[in-house]
Structures are given as C-alpha cells and as structure tokens.
Amino acid sequence: MNFIFLAYGHAGFDGIEIHAAHGYLLKDQVNDRTDKYGGSLENCCRFALEIVEAIVNKIGAEKVGIRLSPFASYAGAGDSNPNALGLYMIESLNKYEKTECSDSLMLLRAAFRGTHIVAGGYDREDGNKAVAENRTDLVAYGRWFLANPDLPRRFELNAPLNQYNRKTFYIEDPVIGYTDYPFLETN
Image 1 (tube, rainbow, N blue to C red):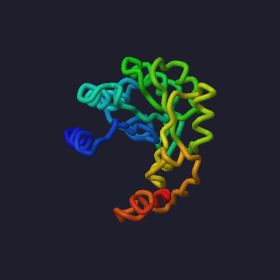
Image 2 (spheres, rainbow, N blue to C red; image 1 turned 90 degrees about the vertical axis):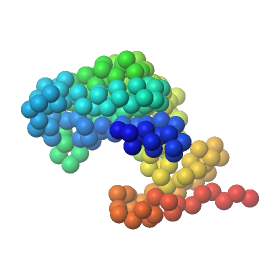
Image 3 (cartoon, rainbow, N blue to C red; image 1 turned 45 degrees about the horizontal axis):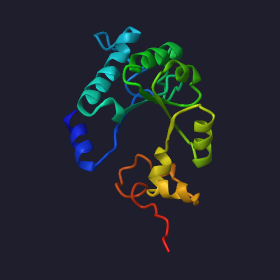
C-alpha cells in the first residue's frame, strides 16, 4: 500500500476513498475463497476492513472514506444478503465515524454514527437537498468533478456544468475525457 501513501503525500490529496462498491472488495457472489477472507460474512468483509485499518492508521480516520453499495448488483457481483452485509460493514466502521453509501440506504444511514457521504449522479440542487433533508452529511461529485475541474467555483456561481461523456471513462487514452474538459472562462 506504499504507493497509496506516496500518491496521497505527493499529490496533495485531501483524503483517500476506498472503493468497495459495485462488487469491489465485498459481495459473496464473487468471493469463492475458502481461507480467512472467504465464506462467512465476517471473512468476506475482512479484507476491506483491513485496508481501512491500514490507511486510517497511516493518515487518520478523518481523511478516509469507504464507498459501499451492498444493494447494487453490478456485472453479476451481487450479494445474497445485502442488508446483513451493509449493516455489518457500517457497524464495523462506526469506530472510524465516516463512510459513504447511496442515499437509498437509509437503514445504513440510521445505523451509522459518523459522517455520512453519498455519491452517484447528484447535481448541485440534488446535493443541497439531500443535505438539507438530513439524508446525508456530505455529497461526493466524482463524475461532475471529472468534467468540471472547477466544480466548486461553478457551484458557487450556479454556473452551467460541462456534461461528462461516459464513453471516455476507463479508456486507454490518458487525455481524452480526463484532462480535456474546459474551465469556466474568467472575464
């Protein structure tokens, strides 16, 4: 994990998000292991929780988030008991008091005692509404940040947003779709 800490320290990131949603790290339907990382719910969650622990110990819990989506079934990566998976992870993460999950997971929101972050398609209005209605504490804007490198300024001015192009996500070209979106023109 040293590369994570090097990137964090040298790139000036504010924190680290662990992506454990959509079948990454969790989900019993894609975990066929028979060792201490497979089988039981606790074992299936062990690896993700060990990653959280290692990163928290290095940079502090206030700078670490984990994205969860126990109810999502992406590319065949579902879970046989998403309620149990979500609640187990939330209860295990309560000691760090920070997590994130989609706002459709109000059961998990109610169980978690720390800072709650939602993500996934929120625009400025939706994000403000989610916070105002106490459905979350914070909103993450991944795709919108990708297409709008000056997103905080655009939100501040209520300026139009560049539309992101999903066809350019996860392609081999390191420029198209990642560094070619325009900034707001300043006069």
